[in-house]
Image (cartoon, rainbow, N blue to C red; front, top):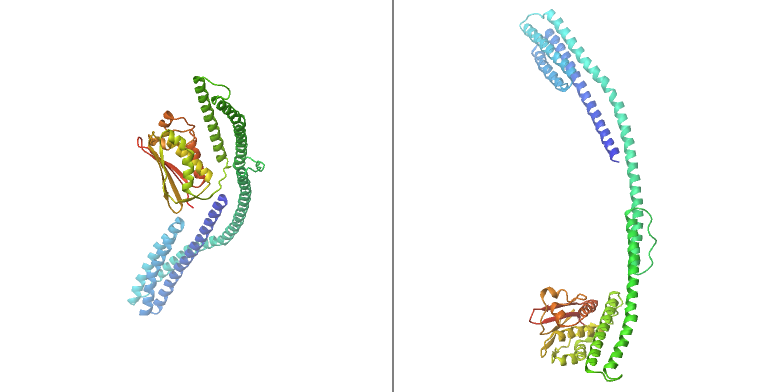
Length: 457
């Protein structure tokens, strides 16, 4: 298309050049003819003036004597770029000067009553014929050239039409190819997007696209990725099932056995044996808690967390959470202060109790004996914010962004307590599943305030 367009531009430029040359030739012929006419007019005017000397014919002759050099200069300008014509016109200009000089001399003789010099008249006639002959040569040459222009213009016009037809045809073919390619690309992209959607819905994928283009390569890579993810998901589920059935069940049985042993059901143990059984039971309990937390996280991440959202008064939920941990608080002589609130929230009561129990349990773990833990509630139209403030050691600024990550604990938490590092991660997942947010505000040595927001009812 670019080559055709360039050729078309070139041909059109050539056509304009031919048209310009034709116009220049016409102007040159017209001006040359004008010079010939003026030369003849000078000769006739001089003869008339010689025959009828009068002021009228004298003024006419004077005008023509001025017109001759003027018209010759115009012709000289037109042929300035044509060396052969320029020399001819220059020669004519010299001859015309000489002829006009003879005419002027004889005009003065006639005005003085003298006769016309016949010899000068013949000389002027010869000069006039020579000039007309030379000018006629220019006219004849340009007329011959002029005859070629229509044929050349017709040829260029035909070529231009042909190129235009070819160019339009090329554009039409190109558009057809582009539309065909776009349609094919759209279909292939639609297939790729359908596969992505099916993968998200865990539905079967369409067959892999054929070809070696980029879309086919992307689709192939996506199929490979989908297969790898499906395999990983299956292996993960097998691992979860293994933990659930092959680990939790035996551990629960061991926990029951240790509990019976520590209670003396199978005989009285020594003090050292009793302590070791209690320690083993605690380790088993922590292991079962870790397994339960891992299964809980897996359930949430897999999208199987079901929330039964209803309107609930907040205070009874807080009271249940405090009651469930009352023994742990009493062991450390910690007082838990509940707020006086009539707030209502739109939550899953069981899951909300789980979040409150986790946060309150952490606060009790890190709070010093004899301290106080306070609940706070802030209400607004869309969300209700629940705060739990303790008087513990606080959390370093760098650790505050990590405490809600899985298996992450602050430095003080690691050194003073035993935990899995999953409780706060589960809290965040549950709160975010409600459409809320969770965070912590803390200063080292001055305690911590864990807060979360859930939709108001």
